[in-house]
Picture 1: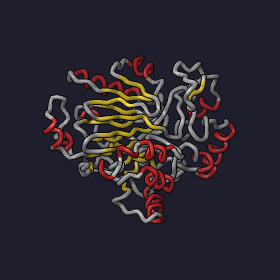
Picture 2: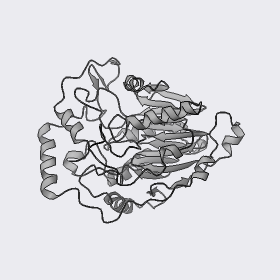
Picture 3: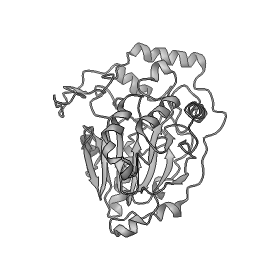
Picture 4: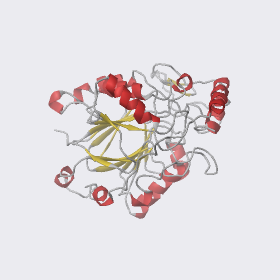
Length: 373
């Protein structure tokens, strides 16, 4: 079965959600029992549509096998570990390091900027599932093994679906930091702090849309995207979801997490226009935008962008360059694992964008980024 079928089934059959302890009637995306999107409201697919999708996928033999394996390369660990990240480093020492991003796989990216090592939606498990006996299985190993990571300063979580919030991965990252007598701060959307504390993770900060948390001079904002949340029965949209807009002195970057196309990306650009003027160095230096898990469109459109919509999101954000993520790692939907880069190339051509403007990389590959002026 496809991506999170057990989760989708639970969502389709879910019981009434619990009262939202964070409910703020002054905020349009808050509801008494959870949260909703800005432009389409709550994501509420009927069970009949789920069954239709699964029936059509079975009849059509989807997903089709990839013709080309997901590209991988051995990580450059000395380069990754040489980045100036320690809280004890001088500001001068930190500023001497070149910002870089390393694709670990799916939506997991190591971003090294502003003197911090930041991980997005870390999943190192074999399966994106509540249990490791079944569910979508990883087709390639993580580009950097968890034990090979440098000390992680911040983990940002976009939402609580199993392919983005993996219990064993976040628990291991927290334990590793403790063993090194360091602290990893987990930044999460509103409503998720209780879950993290139940896992034994204490260094967690939860944010609402547009709220900010600063770590050693780097500003992290949770920003709206169009999606939904759930981990089981009765909790659909009970916790918030979002993207992350991050402002370091040497790099402004955006992480889209998981999202359907909406005006939220343009809203994000407008919201931070004063920080992105020409005199401030322009817009986001890099955006990490999901480009996979988009077929069939009639079922996935509201929750997952296709590559053409990802290109439009890149333009809406006003990003100088973007990297495609959320593909090639787990077979989640109907398109072959190697289809997103093909469709992305076509979408870029339609908008006269180059491979520098919007690119994909190999799992394990590190890309240096220009320091922000």
